[in-house]
Every structure is written in structure tokens, then in C-alpha cells.
Image 1 (cartoon, rainbow, N blue to C red):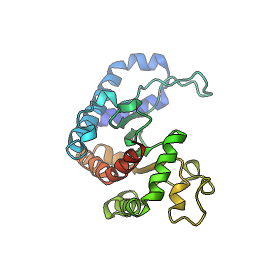
Image 2: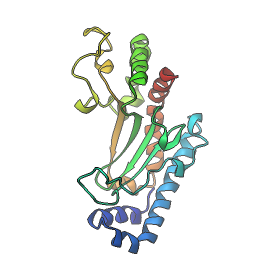
Image 3: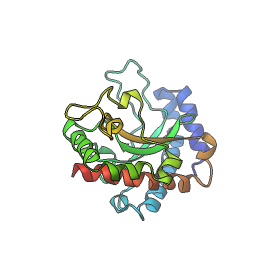
Length: 222
């Protein structure tokens, strides 16, 4: 579980997103950051028993900085009002492999994972693997555990082409997945669940359901 004080800090930060307030509350921030790190480490330690690729990952190598890059942003707020962690074999900086993600933001928390906007060569490999082994891929995304938690991969417009990519027929059995530009599955987390003693257990269960998808994607890019 996460501490109610951590949730309160993020709520307060959202309404006081400025350096003077942050400096005054730096000790509160450090405590909240440590609380989130402890939670992420507990998830890694538990799920690492089933996914060897993350068992030696350390939470601090997965967590994103709270400072925002405002150089090209209209919103000049200096801090993010969330804590995020990307958990995969390369840590948070690994953009070329699929992994797990946890986003802590009161009112907008979620977890899940996959791979977001892979580079063209990597995307081509994933699509090719789905095409060649669609029967295996279909078994993964229609598995009872995966469907009960996620339903399906995210097919929103921002992650999907309007038509199948060049080189594939429109009636390809895997067409709806070949159109994808990102391969992501996410579930929302209620604020009440954030402070529940079952949060680690539920997060690990979500990661376990997603693991076959992660492994399929990473294998296709090797």
C-alpha cells in the first residue's frame, strides 16, 4: 500500500506547483518519493520471481524525475503532479523494449505496460511476428487472466492507424493488431485502492497477466 501522506502530497503539489512551495515542502516530497520507491521495489521483488528479466532491477532506476522539461511547453509548471515508474530489463531509459508501468496520480492513477511508439524497424518486427504467429498472439490476448484484467490492448486512435500498413492485406486475420503503432494495456486504479493493503498484490497480478504480451513483443524485436 501507499501512504495517505503520499497521496496528499501529490494533491497539494497540483494546487501549489511552484518552486517556493516545493522548497518549503521538500522533506515531505522526499518522504513521499521514498514511499513510492518502497512500493515499486515490493512489486519488483514479487513479480521478479516470475519474470527473471526484472528481478535485479532497483526501484530508483525505474522512477522518473518529478521535474518537468518546460523548455518547449506552454505550461511552465516546474513539477509533475505524479510519480511514475517504468519497470523493464533496461530501467526507465529503455525505449527499445516492452515493460511494465505504474502511474501514481490522485484521480488518474493506472498501471499496465507494453511498448509505446517503438521505432520503425522495431515496429516492423513486432508486426511481422504478429502476422507470422497470430495464433500464438491471439491465445495470449484472449487468455482468461489477460481479458479479465485488461479486456484487450489499447486500440484508441492515437495508437492505431486507420488502415493496415503497407505490405499487408486488409482482410488479414490480424489486421486490427497490425494497424497498431503502440502495444499497450492499462487499467485504472481508484484512489481508495492506492492506500489498500492489497495494492502490491493487485499490481503484481496485473503484471502477471501482461507478462506473456511483454515476452512476445520483446522476443519479436530480438
